[in-house]
Each structure stands twice: as C-alpha cells, then as structure tokens.
Length: 493
Image 1 (cartoon, one colour):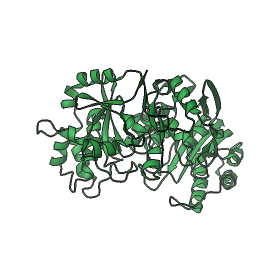
Image 2: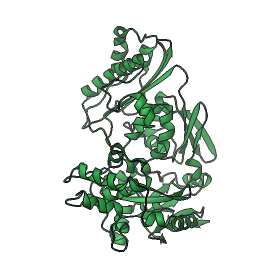
Image 3: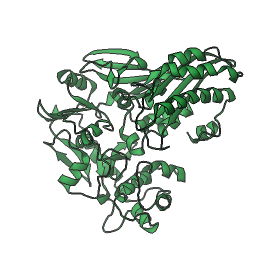
C-alpha cells in the first residue's frame, strides 16, 4: 500500500500533510504554514544553528531526541517523528528548565540565535551524559553561533539545567508519545505528488530498488546535509526526491571480530561508537564531523555517495581498505572504495543504482592507523586537507602502507607513490623518511581555493607524513595534537 501524505507527531497529536512541493524545507513549513516563527533562518546552510529544532523517535522504550537544522531538512523527512520547536517548551506559562537557566545565566542578548541554542540544549537536557562536563556542552553547542553574548553564560546555563535527569512535560509524556509514534509506523511506502514531481519515501529496500529503476533521474536523499544546500544556495530545481530514511535494511550496523558493516543510511552519530572502537583517531574524526545537528542527520553513505573531494570519511575508510556494496534493481556488486570516485563529483554509479553498505576492515595485529583533519576552525569546519595512514609493521620496519588524502585532488585519492616509499622504512631511522615525505608531491597537485593555497596543502601533506611516522615510532601522540594523549581519548570513548 502507498500513503499519499506524510505523518508526524506534534504537541501530543498526529499531523498529516499532503500536496507539498518536494523541495519544501522544514523551516519554510514552520514559518510559512504553521506561522511558528521562533525558529529562525540565519545562514540557510546548516552552519549557524539558528533554525535548530528537535526530532524525536522511539528508542529503548522512550523518545530519543536529536537536534536538526530545519533550514536544510526537507519537510518529508520528518515523517514518523515527533517535531519539537522552541514554542513547545514552555507549559502553562512556565518556562522549560533550559529556558529558565538561560534567563538566570544571562545567556541571551539580541535573541536571534537563542531559539536554536535553546533547542540544542533541550536535546542535551534529554540525551546528555551524566554527570555533565563542560567539554560535552561545548560539543553540543558547536553547531550554534552566538554573535553577541559569548559562550560562557550559555555554557553555564547548560551546566545548570542539563546535569540532572530530565523532568519536564516531555519526559512525563514519554509513554503517550511512544504510543503515538508507534501508531505512525505503518510500514507503508510514501509517495506525495505525481510521476513528474514527487517526494517519495519507500519503506523497504525492494521498494527503493523498484522506485530507483522507474525514476533513475530522481535525487536520492539520506540526511540532506548536502542536497539541502543545492536547494537553499544553488536554487536547484529538484522535482523528484527519494528519501532513504524509512528503509530499515539500510540502517543496520553489523560487527564481527575483523569487520564492521555500516548500512548506507546509518547516521554519523550512530556510527561514531563503532568507528571509534576501530581506532581513537577515527573516533576523534567523527567527533569533529560537522556539528551535533549534522551528525544527527548526515549519513555515512551520503558522505561517500555525494563524491565530495573534501568528505572526511572517504580518505580514512580508503586507508583502512573499505569496500562498497551497490544495488541496481535485483543486482548487487562490490568494489574497493577508492575505485568509486572517478572525477570531481562523479562516481562509478549508473542511474538508478544506490549505495547500500560499506564494509570496513578492523585493524589487525601490527597495523597502526593515524588520521588528521586540518581546518581553519577546529570544530564544525570543512577540511583544507585530511590525511589517513594505515601502516603494517614487522617489528620496527614498515612492510605495507595505505595512505589516502582528501582535499588534495578532485577526488579522495590514495597516495600510491608515498605508499611505495614508506615500505621498508625503519621507524628508528628518521633520517630515511625524507623520500616518503617528498613522494607526496608526486601523488597530488593541489589547487588553490578559499580554504587554503596549493602551497599550504602541499606543505601540510608532507608534514603529516612525518607526523604519522613520528607518532607511530613513539607509540603515542605528540603534545602538539589538540585532542591530547591517546589513552585519555580511549578512556573517553
């Protein structure tokens, strides 16, 4: 059966919407249809957080809330979820604990960014660790920019309000909300529109495969953290949207002793713990992957399938030797991840074919992994360069190497000359490392752009080769690494 509407939970009741344009964003729906203007439009690209709202979905017998950027989230993507905006928090004239703390800590001045900050803190109030520490608050607020107050009073408000177990109207109504959300989960395919313009949300992988074969020109959307910018910034005339968020078969993590299998629609937030167990560097890379809002929406498969040369995950997974599984109709095929990228924003994927799974080998004995993200801002920033290294050791000598960089070419790309130069090097002879450092210039000819110059990228890449060798030789990270010692990071994970 096919449902011609989307349905979501709002203020304790089910809401049904039909007849909307597939490009309609959640922000436009809130401000133009509901006339709920507390949610603001700032950057319109998911960076400033002024548009933050919370989406709740059942998990473990309660509603699990996550922050999302309403400016780049499509309206259809909230199907089956509870939608919470800043107007929903106060009950009977009494402010929510987060709002009260913001008032008492003087955390707001002009107020434009405040609704988004309050909604990020609302999700932290419900989902944050206990006891709460300042670093966790900073992580939660990395996707919210404040231009007047400064973050100290905002962080103080978070520490005041979010350190205790939730006690608000939402926690009190958990059972009712879980029942309502369970009722919405009907397992039906969603198709809003007609054959020429539609928003579709298939409920199974077979339905997705059929729909993609029928409409190979449709735009596939997972988290919409990239496609959303095509709409808000590129003004793209997207007429056919297929959202993958209801395909349960693609939202699975499988783990064995030597392999991690990640479904294409697994979010960065959900993939983070499993990837961090492979290596702390991979965990830290995921922690710095955009903001909490981006990690809650964006997916591992989407970061790869969009073919961006600056996607952080692809170089790391290439270095680890990952493979992709793709499906077209009833046929599936696998390939090494590095072979998927053909040219700038072009991948080895035929029309109607979709990415279904990424297989990541775990590190073996005597294998060492290092990953480094270089960006202007430490948090929530696009990489100028991202380097990943997997070195196989026989004692103190390198017997095999896999090296990949992002931001250095039109695609994420292995550094084959550097790999060859690394093989045979002794970790006890730094004077012999120069050839491997110089080889990086044969692997890449980086371009100048607004993120960095070609000369800067070339120098950084060369230095990262030395850094990877130096840290591998010493067995620990250097003090210059902002994230600190590896044992402290492992303890945190």
